[in-house]
Amino acid sequence: MLIRNSAARMLVLAFGLANAGHADAAGSAKTAAGTNGEQIRIQGTLVIIEPDIELTEVTAGGLQEPRREWTTAARANYPTVVKQLLAAENGPQISVYDVPDDTAPGSRLGQVLRLNQEVAMSIAQYSATGSVLATKKDPLTGKPLLDWQLGQGVQEIREATGADYALFTYVRDSYASSGRTALRTFALIAGAAMGAYVDIGGGMQVGVASVVDLRTGRVVWHNLMVKQSGDLRDTEGARAAVKQLLKDLPL
Image (tube, rainbow, N blue to C red; front, side, top):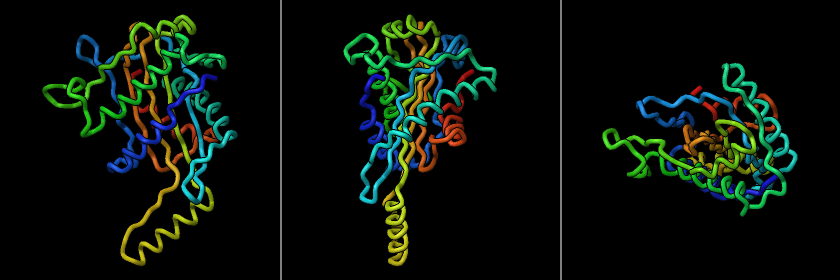
C-alpha cells in the first residue's frame, strides 16, 4: 500500500475546527453544479480507492499511539460498509481498488493520489465558515462553491479501474486509553470544583471524503466529518461513521 502523509494535516484540520467551535461537524457536504446550474448526480460506475485510515490510542499524556490491529480492521470494514449502504440506495455499480504496495510517490499514480489528498484537504479548510476563498464562492450569496479540478492525470486511475468516478477517503480516529479517560475525568471534576470547565480532551474522529469524475478530473462531491465519538473498529460503528461521512452523496 502506498504510504501517504495526510496524518499531520488531518489532525491540524481537526483540532483547528474543534477550537473554532466545530467539535462535532457533520452535514457539510457540498456537490458541484452542472452547466444547467443543478447539482451533478453520480451516474455511472464508482470505484472505492483504498481508504487512507489510521486509528490511534490517546495515552494519558496525550500522545497518539498508532494501533495496527485497529487500523487493519477499520480499513477492511470501510469498503464493505460503503458497498452495503450504496446498494441499499440503488447506488452505482461499485468496485474497490487497492493501491499497489510498490507504488512510488513520484510515479504518475502516486502523484495523482498526492494531488487529490492536497485538494481534498484544501476544500475542507477553505470552504469552512470564515475561510472561504474569494475565487471559490458564489458572488451573490457568498456561499462556497465546489469548483475544484484534479486535471487529466486522473485518467491513470480510470485506465487502472475502468470506473467513471472515484471515492477517496481519509480518516483519522483516536480513542482515549483508560489512563487518559481517568485523567480527563479528574480534570473535569477539579475544574468544576473551581467553577470552571476543564476538558483535556479524549479521542476524536475526523474524516474527509470526495468523489472525483475520472473522465474530467472534476471534484463533484466533498464532505467533512469531525466528531468526538465514533468507532470504525467494528461493523456497526463503521456503518454509523460511513452514514455520516457519505451523507448527501448525490446518487
